[in-house]
Each structure stands twice: as structure tokens, then as C-alpha cells.
Length: 120
Image 1 (tube, helix red, strand yellow):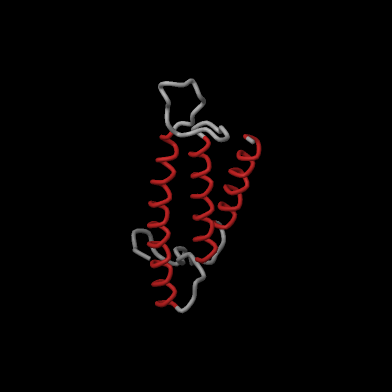
Image 2 (cartoon, rainbow, N blue to C red; image 1 turned 90 degrees about the vertical axis):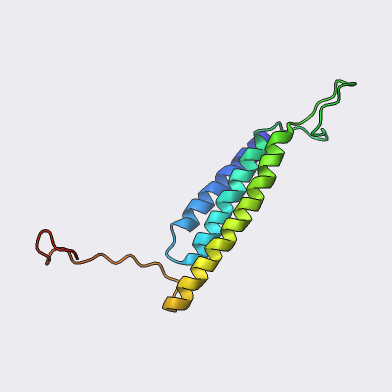
């Protein structure tokens, strides 16, 4: 179970980084979403991976339980990632509507022709 979750976190992280390095805005947004899923799975795994165990401690019985703190952190991270995804989508949509293209181009300025000390 731990190996499956660790490999899932690794695959989500690798796919997220691969998509972030693309030159279009939509794959970048998907890559950020995959990275947030990977972080959420990692945070959830920091508790204990126990099957059919409640997230509360029973003081009358000695039963296994899972730590509720990572579950609360994951719920908070889900809300924050949803909000940040909405902000990024709106920024990407505004950039697309202003330039009519979603390609990310970083053109280098010609600094060879400029004299030293001049702004390019």
C-alpha cells in the first residue's frame, strides 16, 4: 500500500513537472493541478495508512486510529488549490483574450546593438 501511494505521488509529480514545462497555458494549469494532487496525497500519507481505522482516539478501547491532522491539512490544501486554480485560469484567459494566442513566448531582446548603460 505504501509503495503504491509513493509511486502515485512520484508519477503525479513527474507528470505535473512535465506539463508545467510546456509552452501553452492550458498544460501549465493542468500540471499545477497534478502537482497539487501529488502534494495532497503526500500530506495524506504523512498520517498513517491504516485501513478501516477511525480518525479519532477512543480512550476506552485500545484500537488503531489515524492521525486527523493530515486529513485537515489535505482539506485545507484542496480549498486553497481550487482557489489558486481559479485565479490562474482567469489570468490565462485574460492573457489569451488580449493576445489571441495561448503560447508562452519569451523573446530575447537584442542587447548586442545597444550601447553600455542604455535600456533595451
